[in-house]
Length: 367
Image 1 (cartoon, helix red, strand yellow):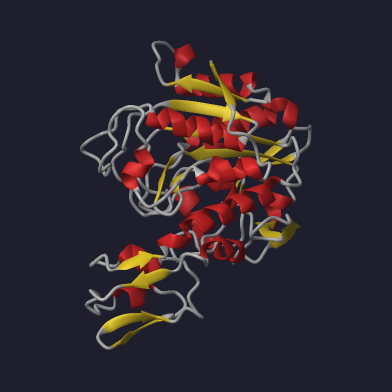
Image 2 (cartoon, one colour):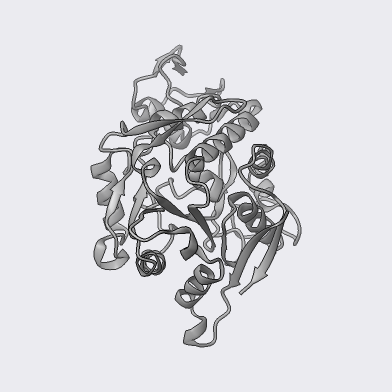
């Protein structure tokens, strides 16, 4: 049976058609208030953006969701989890400071901020899932304990999953650092023979898993936590990933998404923002130029259907030739394969359907 996905484009000629109005209309059209009970502690799962990034979801838009949740009689809080890599969101104090810097304070967003896995990422609950790769998933304690959840996702490219939407937001965004490591550890970095031994990767490694040996950097894989800091900072691009395992990584990620919502049947709602569709995750401390025009906002109760519809809408666009998009610029061509030819990003949806996270079959309802 097809899932309903509600869609509003960004065309606007009056105040009743602005983005704020469209968000409220989508919330009402999808009947999200029926999934939230009075006095629920409602997690609004959001990515606050790495310091230096500016393509995260506008906190003014988030405020509209906060107000709608309050109107339904629930108590919303904005939340995310600490990162595995060492950036501006690795612990709760830095994370909160970054969120406030990016406008997610109470005066703007209208809700308190809670870093769901605690000050150092140790607040986790193991959820039994019994799937192919994992028997349990390590989910942030305060997300698991929330009564209901609204998942707000910036749909964009991603260097390991092809693209990131609702499924990735659930998987990485709701996992503790240990849970993130479980997902990442099958795709650890490798260093080729062109390494010049500059040492920048060594300085970036948070667990001292790298040394210079024979004028080249070497990795101690027993210590490596697969944070991929070294992959990001290498000036010579000699650090790569174990691409043969990337499909396994995406499946593991999808299983974690399943674990994040397993105990919230009919209590999770999803909204994808298809704007500023950049090549990279909002975890990077920059925002590259978009690869396609802004498209619109989508809402659904089904994360698989929502991401499938978002994926199709992006691929229906003409790609920007002055962007990172190397090829596949024409309508109908896979834009994310144009960015990352080694990644089959749609494994997220196919495997998500296989494990009953949702269905790829959807009806797109224009609002």
